[in-house]
Image 1: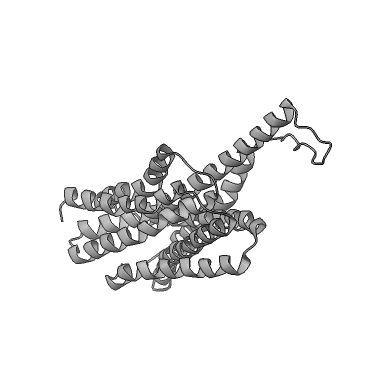
Image 2: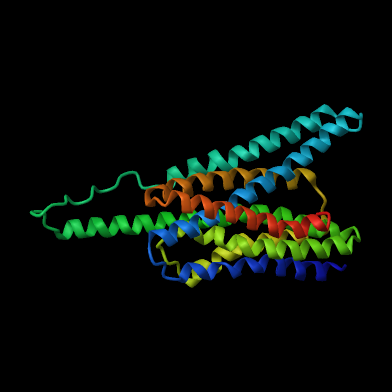
Length: 285
């Protein structure tokens, strides 16, 4: 498979993330629908977390086996282990610290409720400011999810590029088909936590580019460069970021209730992630 064909097919695999994004433009009927979509997204993200960390562990475990057989040095194994742990910390704690710094330092208290309470111009402005802050936070969470998925998809693109460059055409083809199906579900992971926030088409286009574009870039890099530490770094940071986002979405959805419905949709989202990944497993990817 030529470099040009690999890049085009890698772009196709990443483009399918746009299939789920338009759902964010639909007017959801109420909290029940919001919880259902968000928790389905959490299920997909939970599967992605398991998937990326499994791939990261495999790289470190291979190095440990090599050290046991005398083919790898202890320094190499230690470096990969530190890369896995450090990347995970950067993706989880690092995102938390960054989000805390981006959060407004103070917020105006909401106006007092009651029969005698009157909404002044200042109160109306404060309410509007709080609504805008909540919208910005939801969009920021969605874009954070897109970035975390993008890191994961870059590593997937590396696998496509490496397989194509080594002449394993059948494997590369199955990987492309599998990742295309897999990425189609990731769009729900981006837009699910937005809740009642209706993003613009421009925001959706950018989110799809952030989440799906790295598959295209990874296929180019993987075709020309083979680097396990690079692949491990992206898996580690992606795993930490996905876990952080799962915690944020889970906390946000608890206030709506519908616990049983949410857990059922979480399980369904996880199952969908497994089902789409089986195509990749069938091809040996």
